[in-house]
Length: 340
Image (cartoon, rainbow, N blue to C red):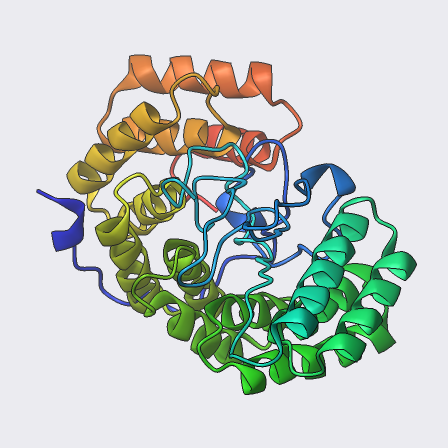
């Protein structure tokens, strides 16, 4: 059976505990939350060339521009969801320096370059210098939408209460200036998710995820699915993840989330098929604690004692302090209890 044919029944109000923390390895399902404002400087990519866009991981373009991509994402992108171990994070910020109309090209180019320089300084965590570059971008072209979007990213990255409040207006301004600026919709959704305004975030991710031709569309759909998980709507989440798979069968995030959703519905054969596909996608990267725990659950559901024991030993040996290891220990002490 193809994964896109799977239909899930809504579950209760159990949303994932808040995590989505960007990490080297994925942690448990319960660690997925929107917590991305403190992206480290190592995660930023270099300043793009004159014909490229500038991005903060992952980098995605608006329509009609050529760019270098940081991940094959999602989000976030040769193929939009390149296999990665960082599978608990929501698709991060996306930035663009695309002009949005035919105003004075010289002024637009100044604004574009200043915005690109700001992205470079953000990469170095030189936020004050980045802010000064963006002020110069506004002075050159006060209607340059990517500069407002970048300022929103900068303020959110700084993370103080006052700057988080200011960021909201900058994202809104970018969208007002260019309603077809899909990256701004996605970035605003990321911001709203961090502020726990999940229903508003879902609206923004839906806009970006429905924009055919937008290279960050798959990432937006993955974000949409995880937002619905936060809202406790597993049926809507499954639909979003299936849409992501329709657009990119290599979406690891969609695979992993659907495996958990199917396990919760006790649809073990479908979950096993998706799990096997996931293992193929992550070959060579090492298996994460979350994937190990999923394998243990699948083996237990199918009474495959040998596989269950092998995977359990691997999880406890390789990731003894992980949340998944703690869940496994709790379950081993009481095998009749449900997984938590």
